[in-house]
Length: 432
Image (cartoon, rainbow, N blue to C red; front, side, top):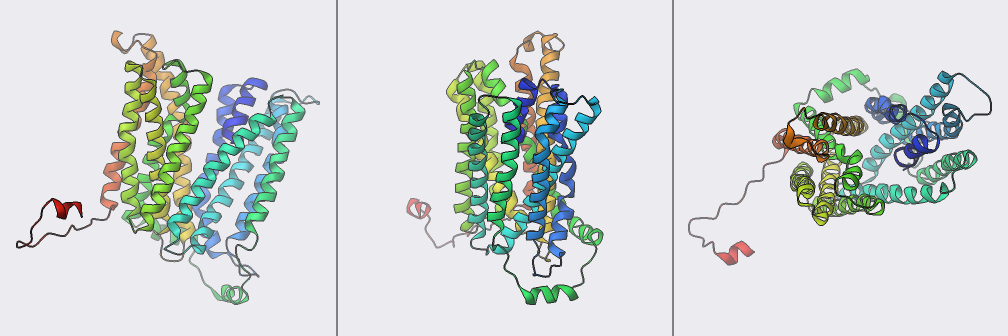
């Protein structure tokens, strides 16, 4: 909520930082995303005097995130030229880059170890509900954080920015401290066993993991599906305002529609997975749900159908929710050799990088195609402001089709019972 929403606007509008520099800063956490697999592996094999594995990495990530948030407001003020002491431009850029990089590294570290801890603590029966609960709380936290930041920064000033961001650092530290309390009980027996454990080096474990063709296909499906659902993040509200002529309040409500659809997807996924459904089949259903949703958004412009547009936004959130829960649950069950942290780290790395690339490509493709259309390079029929947006949504639909192709061989085949020749199969049988 702070990084993508609030600071994005504050840096561009109030601090007059160039948009390309803001985009670069927000993309910096992507640089540490590929290291999530290493973090997960280290939490799998960590040796602690208390018998802990995950907690040290979650706490270490919290501290890194705290220090990044602590220096961030001062770095942003120096970056925008509002610092009290004149410094070279490169110093402000370097300080802001360091702050964003530390927040991203801390977040990625804590999240990877936290997901592995949730996998350790949850049984096979409760794991679907745990996954859905984590996503629901993530969504509620993002919405609540957005509301809190908009209220706290209503009367913007440099001093208020410092107070809010550093206050956020303290809140992160306190909340994570409470969240970590007694999550991993001290276990002297496990600590003693850790001293004699011999683990393969990361390189060999990773080679074994990635040599599995299903693992490769799963990571490709995760990346492609994540890109398909996230390219619209930066163009949905502008599309609603510029093309559908919705008010600022109405376009802001689109975020609530996306969140509501995602929430419905999370809750449905929890119920279905608890009954033993294949998580990758569920993820594929999410991809299928995204196809009519994107189609509705595309056709809403020529039809000027506001309700169709809103229905499409709701469907995108629903399909994305099913896909996210399905792939995360599949990642939790993928590695049965004691290296679940590595599997979850690989899933998180692919998802984070794909989401970042998707947001960048969504904005870039919209600008590029809109510019070509306005110049008439695409033909007279496409000289329309909606062309750039429509192109992005079509690309997302193509990515959804590719995702279905990639994920198809991973879905478990369920053999349907064939009735015996002597059995009658009527409407009553079908309804049962």
